[in-house]
Length: 215
Image (cartoon, rainbow, N blue to C red):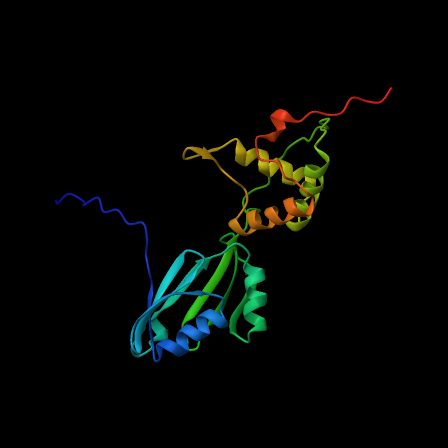
Protein backbone atom coordinates (compact mmCIF):
# COMPACT_ATOMS: atom_id res chain seq x y z
CA UNK A 1 0.00 0.00 0.00
CA UNK A 2 1.42 3.38 -1.00
CA UNK A 3 1.40 6.36 1.35
CA UNK A 4 -1.13 9.11 0.68
CA UNK A 5 0.56 12.27 -0.57
CA UNK A 6 -0.43 15.23 1.67
CA UNK A 7 -1.44 17.66 -1.09
CA UNK A 8 -2.49 21.17 -0.06
CA UNK A 9 -5.03 23.05 -2.17
CA UNK A 10 -6.34 26.53 -1.30
CA UNK A 11 -8.28 27.24 -4.49
CA UNK A 12 -10.32 25.41 -7.09
CA UNK A 13 -11.69 26.66 -10.42
CA UNK A 14 -14.42 25.04 -12.46
CA UNK A 15 -14.01 25.37 -16.22
CA UNK A 16 -16.85 25.74 -18.72
CA UNK A 17 -16.53 25.47 -22.49
CA UNK A 18 -18.27 28.38 -24.25
CA UNK A 19 -18.81 29.20 -27.91
CA UNK A 20 -17.67 32.82 -27.69
CA UNK A 21 -15.62 34.28 -24.84
CA UNK A 22 -16.78 37.90 -25.23
CA UNK A 23 -20.46 36.94 -25.29
CA UNK A 24 -20.04 34.66 -22.28
CA UNK A 25 -18.13 37.30 -20.30
CA UNK A 26 -20.86 39.86 -21.07
CA UNK A 27 -23.55 37.45 -19.82
CA UNK A 28 -21.74 36.54 -16.62
CA UNK A 29 -20.78 40.12 -15.71
CA UNK A 30 -23.83 42.08 -16.82
CA UNK A 31 -26.64 39.61 -16.20
CA UNK A 32 -25.36 37.28 -13.46
CA UNK A 33 -23.43 39.86 -11.42
CA UNK A 34 -19.96 38.31 -11.67
CA UNK A 35 -16.94 40.54 -12.20
CA UNK A 36 -14.23 40.06 -14.78
CA UNK A 37 -11.00 38.56 -13.49
CA UNK A 38 -9.03 38.37 -16.72
CA UNK A 39 -9.16 37.55 -20.41
CA UNK A 40 -6.37 35.89 -22.36
CA UNK A 41 -5.67 36.12 -26.06
CA UNK A 42 -6.60 38.57 -28.82
CA UNK A 43 -9.29 37.74 -29.63
CA UNK A 44 -9.77 36.14 -26.21
CA UNK A 45 -9.99 32.37 -25.99
CA UNK A 46 -9.89 32.09 -22.19
CA UNK A 47 -11.29 34.18 -19.33
CA UNK A 48 -11.91 34.16 -15.60
CA UNK A 49 -15.01 35.60 -13.93
CA UNK A 50 -15.52 35.92 -10.20
CA UNK A 51 -18.44 35.84 -7.78
CA UNK A 52 -16.95 37.35 -4.63
CA UNK A 53 -13.72 35.32 -4.30
CA UNK A 54 -14.84 32.26 -6.28
CA UNK A 55 -13.51 32.25 -9.84
CA UNK A 56 -14.60 30.06 -12.74
CA UNK A 57 -12.83 29.74 -16.05
CA UNK A 58 -14.53 30.21 -19.41
CA UNK A 59 -12.65 28.51 -22.20
CA UNK A 60 -13.39 28.59 -25.91
CA UNK A 61 -14.81 25.28 -27.11
CA UNK A 62 -17.98 23.29 -27.71
CA UNK A 63 -20.43 23.71 -24.81
CA UNK A 64 -21.44 20.47 -23.09
CA UNK A 65 -24.06 21.47 -20.54
CA UNK A 66 -25.25 17.93 -19.94
CA UNK A 67 -22.19 17.12 -17.88
CA UNK A 68 -21.45 20.39 -16.06
CA UNK A 69 -22.98 22.30 -13.14
CA UNK A 70 -21.59 24.58 -10.44
CA UNK A 71 -22.89 25.27 -6.93
CA UNK A 72 -22.20 28.64 -5.27
CA UNK A 73 -22.70 29.44 -1.57
CA UNK A 74 -23.61 33.12 -1.30
CA UNK A 75 -24.57 35.59 1.42
CA UNK A 76 -28.22 36.05 0.42
CA UNK A 77 -29.68 33.78 -2.25
CA UNK A 78 -32.99 35.64 -2.37
CA UNK A 79 -31.32 38.97 -3.10
CA UNK A 80 -29.24 37.43 -5.88
CA UNK A 81 -32.31 35.64 -7.25
CA UNK A 82 -34.17 38.96 -7.53
CA UNK A 83 -31.19 40.39 -9.44
CA UNK A 84 -31.06 37.44 -11.83
CA UNK A 85 -34.82 37.46 -12.35
CA UNK A 86 -34.78 41.19 -13.13
CA UNK A 87 -32.08 40.51 -15.74
CA UNK A 88 -34.19 37.91 -17.51
CA UNK A 89 -31.98 34.97 -16.56
CA UNK A 90 -33.59 31.55 -17.17
CA UNK A 91 -34.74 30.18 -13.82
CA UNK A 92 -34.72 26.38 -13.64
CA UNK A 93 -35.67 25.96 -9.97
CA UNK A 94 -37.04 28.87 -7.88
CA UNK A 95 -35.71 29.54 -4.36
CA UNK A 96 -36.73 27.02 -1.75
CA UNK A 97 -35.70 25.72 1.67
CA UNK A 98 -34.14 22.32 1.08
CA UNK A 99 -33.99 19.31 3.38
CA UNK A 100 -30.19 19.65 3.39
CA UNK A 101 -30.57 22.94 5.31
CA UNK A 102 -29.76 25.27 2.43
CA UNK A 103 -32.05 27.74 0.66
CA UNK A 104 -31.12 27.70 -3.00
CA UNK A 105 -32.26 28.11 -6.60
CA UNK A 106 -30.92 27.11 -10.01
CA UNK A 107 -30.51 28.97 -13.29
CA UNK A 108 -29.29 28.04 -16.75
CA UNK A 109 -26.70 30.21 -18.47
CA UNK A 110 -26.65 31.13 -22.14
CA UNK A 111 -25.01 27.79 -23.05
CA UNK A 112 -27.33 25.67 -20.93
CA UNK A 113 -25.01 25.13 -17.95
CA UNK A 114 -26.76 24.75 -14.60
CA UNK A 115 -25.65 27.15 -11.86
CA UNK A 116 -27.08 26.88 -8.36
CA UNK A 117 -26.86 29.60 -5.70
CA UNK A 118 -27.71 29.04 -2.05
CA UNK A 119 -27.21 30.21 1.51
CA UNK A 120 -27.23 28.15 4.74
CA UNK A 121 -30.38 27.74 6.82
CA UNK A 122 -29.33 27.83 10.46
CA UNK A 123 -32.82 26.86 11.62
CA UNK A 124 -32.09 23.26 10.60
CA UNK A 125 -31.79 20.60 13.28
CA UNK A 126 -33.90 19.61 16.28
CA UNK A 127 -35.36 22.33 18.53
CA UNK A 128 -33.32 23.22 21.62
CA UNK A 129 -35.52 23.75 24.69
CA UNK A 130 -34.37 26.82 26.65
CA UNK A 131 -35.55 29.13 29.38
CA UNK A 132 -35.05 32.85 28.82
CA UNK A 133 -34.48 35.21 31.75
CA UNK A 134 -34.72 38.97 31.98
CA UNK A 135 -31.29 40.59 32.12
CA UNK A 136 -31.07 44.29 32.95
CA UNK A 137 -29.08 45.65 30.01
CA UNK A 138 -28.27 49.27 29.27
CA UNK A 139 -26.60 50.03 25.93
CA UNK A 140 -25.04 53.07 24.39
CA UNK A 141 -27.91 54.87 22.62
CA UNK A 142 -26.46 54.79 19.08
CA UNK A 143 -25.37 51.17 19.46
CA UNK A 144 -28.86 50.19 20.61
CA UNK A 145 -30.34 51.87 17.51
CA UNK A 146 -27.89 49.95 15.29
CA UNK A 147 -28.80 46.67 17.00
CA UNK A 148 -32.50 47.30 16.42
CA UNK A 149 -31.92 47.98 12.71
CA UNK A 150 -29.62 44.96 12.38
CA UNK A 151 -32.20 42.64 13.95
CA UNK A 152 -34.85 43.86 11.51
CA UNK A 153 -32.44 43.39 8.61
CA UNK A 154 -31.75 39.79 9.68
CA UNK A 155 -35.47 39.15 10.38
CA UNK A 156 -34.71 38.40 14.00
CA UNK A 157 -35.80 39.76 17.35
CA UNK A 158 -33.29 41.90 19.22
CA UNK A 159 -33.08 39.12 21.82
CA UNK A 160 -32.21 36.47 19.22
CA UNK A 161 -29.75 38.78 17.50
CA UNK A 162 -27.91 39.37 20.78
CA UNK A 163 -27.88 35.63 21.51
CA UNK A 164 -26.42 34.92 18.08
CA UNK A 165 -23.68 37.52 18.58
CA UNK A 166 -22.83 36.19 22.05
CA UNK A 167 -22.68 32.56 20.90
CA UNK A 168 -20.33 33.43 18.06
CA UNK A 169 -18.00 35.71 20.00
CA UNK A 170 -17.57 32.98 22.62
CA UNK A 171 -16.10 30.63 20.00
CA UNK A 172 -12.46 30.85 18.82
CA UNK A 173 -11.73 31.08 15.11
CA UNK A 174 -8.02 30.91 14.37
CA UNK A 175 -6.37 33.71 16.31
CA UNK A 176 -9.65 35.58 16.70
CA UNK A 177 -13.30 34.82 17.35
CA UNK A 178 -16.14 33.73 15.09
CA UNK A 179 -18.56 36.23 13.58
CA UNK A 180 -22.24 35.55 12.87
CA UNK A 181 -22.21 38.04 10.00
CA UNK A 182 -21.56 37.50 6.31
CA UNK A 183 -19.35 40.01 4.50
CA UNK A 184 -22.51 41.51 3.01
CA UNK A 185 -23.99 42.02 6.47
CA UNK A 186 -20.73 43.52 7.71
CA UNK A 187 -20.89 46.03 4.87
CA UNK A 188 -24.47 46.83 5.88
CA UNK A 189 -23.35 47.32 9.49
CA UNK A 190 -20.88 49.95 8.26
CA UNK A 191 -23.83 51.76 6.67
CA UNK A 192 -25.72 51.56 9.98
CA UNK A 193 -22.71 52.97 11.84
CA UNK A 194 -22.69 55.97 9.51
CA UNK A 195 -26.48 56.31 9.81
CA UNK A 196 -26.35 56.44 13.61
CA UNK A 197 -23.15 58.47 13.87
CA UNK A 198 -21.08 55.73 15.52
CA UNK A 199 -17.53 57.03 15.28
CA UNK A 200 -15.84 54.86 17.92
CA UNK A 201 -14.05 51.53 17.49
CA UNK A 202 -14.75 48.06 18.88
CA UNK A 203 -12.78 48.73 22.08
CA UNK A 204 -14.53 52.00 22.90
CA UNK A 205 -16.74 50.49 25.60
CA UNK A 206 -13.75 50.56 27.99
CA UNK A 207 -13.88 54.34 27.76
CA UNK A 208 -17.63 54.92 27.85
CA UNK A 209 -18.51 57.46 30.56
CA UNK A 210 -22.08 58.51 31.28
CA UNK A 211 -22.75 62.12 32.29
CA UNK A 212 -23.50 62.72 35.93
CA UNK A 213 -27.24 63.14 36.58
CA UNK A 214 -28.31 66.70 37.10
CA UNK A 215 -29.12 67.52 40.70
